[in-house]
Structures are given as structure tokens and as C-alpha cells.
Image (cartoon, rainbow, N blue to C red; front, side, top):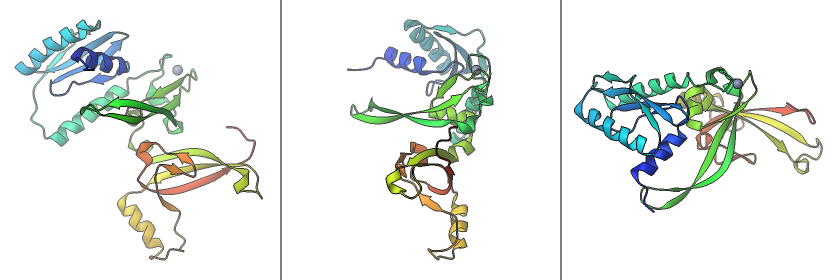
Length: 255
Ligand SMILES: [Zn+2]
């Protein structure tokens, strides 16, 4: 089964969150989603390629039953930026957009207690690679809660990273219960762990605290795989050198 450009466009449009940014690769066009089946062109690069692409995109988008508002579109001069500068500029634009995302009650998502968000594994989905091969890809969402109306808002991991910033992506907290069989003297206990990714200088400082002595007093350092104490870690936490802090949570106590 071959996907048509219409299928592709529709998939992208439907996945775009309201207020989300869509920049089709290489066209110099930026759209944001403004409603259930509507998007708005916000910028077009000031050159013939982008001008033509704008017309083609309009036909394509309207062809799948969506509305395009071009009345607010601004022409931008093409800047000769290095790929790094371009990437930085795009990231800043995306972050700015993310500040405008809102809960149904009007509370900005950026005002949510994002550091308390929980990562949730939603199972695996079959994806078709450009080569035609199929691959199982893990699906994750980040569960946040509106502090005003208490609505649960699941976010795409990428969107969560934009909103919460780098710090939120370098620490990861979770709870796990340790079965009674492994702790016969204590009974059922729950523990909360925080894994914090260490930078290279931090790893060196950690190791130097022990002067190469494996039984030294340095805090716990750990290299992550897929699981930690039986808990499946989200992909961005795997394959990292982390410091581990843990708290024991009293039995029977709920959050
Ligand atoms: Zn709300």
C-alpha cells in the first residue's frame, strides 16, 4: 500500500495539536493549527520556491477537507544561517509556540506542575519505514494534570520536552513496589526513585570522590538499561550514567 501525499498531509494535520507548529521540510512555510480542521499560514519565505509551494500546499490541504487561512501570513527574508543557527531558531520558535498551548479551561500548559508529570508506556505500534520494512515502535505519553480544572492532559514526549525544558528531561522520578518475598523482614514497601543524568565532568567528580576505590563513599551511580528495579524506563532515560536517590514510602500511604 502506497501512501499518497494527501494521506501523509492528513496524518500530519490530525496529529498536530492546536497551536502546534508545522513546517513542511524545505518549503519555507510555517503553519499553526487553529481549530478542528483549520490551520493558519504564519510565515512564508520571500522567494519564488516558497511562493509556489504555498499554492501547492493550499490545494493539498484544502483537498483533504481542511481550511487554510493565509490572511495573517508574513513574508520573511531568507536568512543565510548555518544549519546549527537554523536549528536554534526553529527550537526557539517551537518553544515560543508551546507557551501558547492551553488547557480547555484556558490555563496555559506551561503553568502546569510539569515536574510532577508521569511517563506512561502506551504499548507498541507498527510503523512502516521508508524502506517498506515494518518496525515495532514504543509509544509513550507524558501525563500532566491541570492545576485549575484537574483535567488530565497527556502530552507527546517531544511536546513535553518543549514545555518543560531540558532540566525535566535529565531527571526522571518513578515509584515501584518491592515484593514482600524480597523483603521478608520489612513487608511490602514502596520506593520512589529519582534518576539524574550526569554530565561528563560530574561523572569524573563522582569517580574521583572514591579515588578509584570501588568501596568508597561516593553516592550511588548507575548506568541505565531498559529497566531499573523492574520498572521500564522511557527511551530518553536509557543508556545514561545517572545518580540515584531513593526514598521509602510508608506502606498504605497514598499520594
Ligand atoms: Zn484546565
